[in-house]
Length: 102
Image (cartoon, helix red, strand yellow):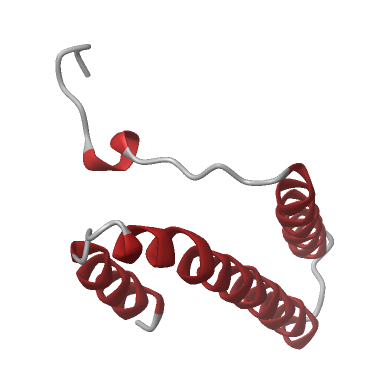
């Protein structure tokens, strides 16, 4: 991508407190560890049901991460943008929720 082009995802950012970043990264590290565990189970020919149970645990962990992040987004970014008169943030939120609920 050339320097003159930009994408919408690169134009916005969210400032997070050190504590919030730490909590989110901790959750992601745990999820990453769970994924590595599942890979190890596959490499060691673990029983399908055992792998599926661990996979469900990863899905639950990712959903929990998403719930925490969306709550933070609504309380912070969305609220701020609405106060600033940027009501298009509501449409963005609706689209994001639709993608998460697929």
